[in-house]
Image 1 (cartoon, helix red, strand yellow):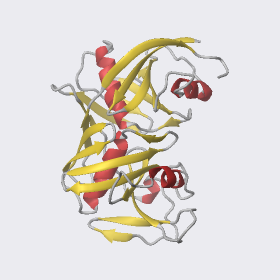
Image 2: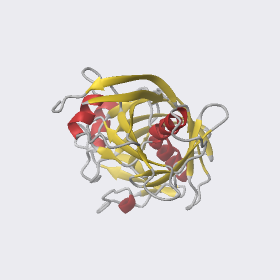
Image 3: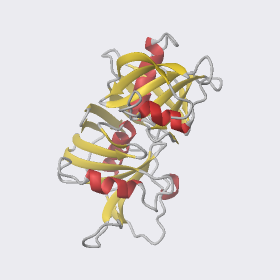
Length: 292
């Protein structure tokens, strides 16, 4: 199969973007994995697909596949690239969009400075909504939130790590660390991602608070591994930090790929807003094997 694609990145989180507005390509999980492969395919953290509006009042459908070929609910950096793509390709003349994802509608908006702001919806913290199996666990209250003990299958002292949990349409576990540069992301990230208490697996965030308006963040993403930035992870980390009483309502998030700005008023019905870059890297064509 011969297809056209666009390579994009948002704060270093990189994507292959496919246009299915004129018809489905019908790719298999193995073919998504091939596209994401950095040695044999194009190379990407996620594959983003643009599909036509599925309902009145919706501009497009947004479909996300991780590098492992699995479809997932949300990708914040991808949402910004999605908005930039449909505008630059002439698929819409709007600067403000309503886009259907697997878990709901998001509202990206292109701003005058060239960045994109996305209404990511309201965060959810109840264990069942993440989902997180909290049976038998006693959380530690802090601020208006809580941290949950999570026992990891590692050698050494049998001490749990403490995580704050949140859903931004996809599951997140956020751990406070003193320094993200020395945090054990490669060792601990996979243990949290695949922990039995997260039935849909989880994105594992490592959050360093610099001050109330600034943090540093690394995320080991579900189905992908550590990425240079995770937009939904930044939203979840800031929302958790606000609930724990550590952060103000507007926070600059420094990722290894660049700067994101996250704003959340903190109310139960308040949405999280994420602002950051979205850039086209190159366009191309590729032959995808029927059985990669």
